[in-house]
Length: 430
Length: 209
Image (tube, rainbow over all chains, first blue to last red; front, side, top):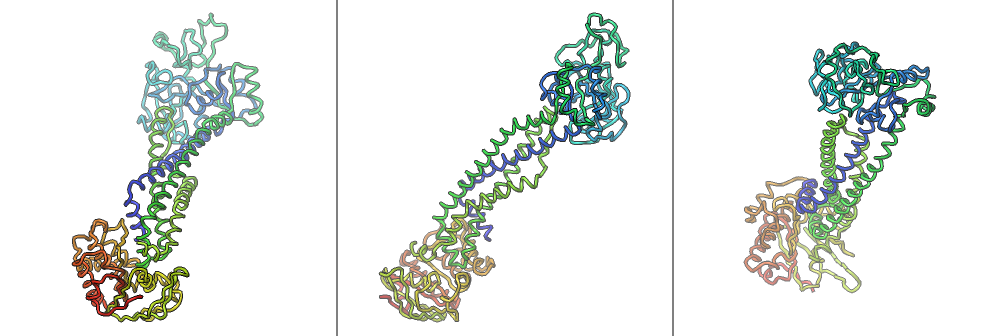
């Protein structure tokens, strides 16, 4: 009955209630969106750098190198010589070194030439079928298999570059030999093949086209491949490369290094920068830099949201306090009918709490809707999806308690006033 | 049924009231008259347990209400005393029926919906039960507050100027109704008023001077 009374009272002044509710919903929605986004974003970023101590790639922005090589979101910095990279890959400090060669995509999903170690790094297994062994055999990430409905034995053609609208390499059909298990990491959205496959597709076969494996912007004329269908040999020697001032080399995009000895983490970036044309970037440092960059923005938004919550608290307080003047007769009357002081106190508190709980529920739903919308955009653009159905009990629990606290605080003074109401005085002044 | 003894109450040093001893039995009506400022409402609030006397005692049936704690007094009031005020106040957000039901719930935790309906019908308010109290005329509001005062079958029914804001016809109606209903419910009815029209209806009266 108290609940019903509180509910009816809230809707007796719908504008007051709606204002408080909108403010509450807005603040809770922003905060819960931030909580969910931050948590999942950091988790996705951190889980992907597990087992990568250092990334070697072409010179350029280290952040770009990390984003492209580890997260597969940015364009690569360029190509490096496989031969040169191997010097470091075979170093005694190194536990595993995974080469990555980018070049093509299939309907927007990157085809990455690598070794089976790459799957292992993400603790992904080949769920159905088998691992790629020969050229043009691919293992497809679980998400892609689901989205594009690919099965073992399917074939497809890659498109050059990162965008879906590129030249199609029509002469090199890829065959799906396996589907990877889901990991929740970037590998779910990749198509993996041997490095040699990538070389084969982009191999020049008699043309001076080094730096091709990866060069996103140049216009290749792939018709030339028709003239020389014998492709696919790795280390294809360039016979007409006299005009080059160096030997034709195979190229890769980046190498993911895991060290046996952590010594390398400290010394390698400088050694590589000084002695080679490559750079070595530390993912942990770059990602920290990235987080601290947008951390400011998130923090500011969070303060803003708590500010809105404070305002909603004040709005609830003013609404309750103003209504108290009109309601003191009905409170006196309820006391006459047998209501205790505590019941009136509870009633006022309950009205505020009801508002806060409804506002919290609306807020979490709106926050998740927003996350869902953001997720569909990021999924499309960066192959990074957020799950709006995750409940972060601890952080959202704290948010709930804060909301409840605001509700209690806003109602405290009006509730005490109701509690200490002098019935006789109120009724005789009527 | 109700018996007072040496009741004294003061708001401050200048305004002190000393009331004559009262006695009223169940089903009987006592009219207390007096001019403004003679403490009529104060006496009624003392009888209803809304105020505590400085000295003296009030016993209703076998309970001395001045010795009850605040919480016991709330409960006692809910169960045993019905109050009809000069101006009717309602919980503005609840409809007529809900207002009456609320009184029953507050006194004993039960929602006497059917009883409230039949009371309202008996008071000729059949068409108003789902309206908000603010939509009713003053006479109708007064009858709703009578229904609310009676829903818990109180032993004591107190009325503070129940007719002063009503026209002659309605005043007579309400007076009759109060008397009839208090007899029906075997309640002791005490009315305080300066309304001269009621003196003819009720024989048993005390004048405060």
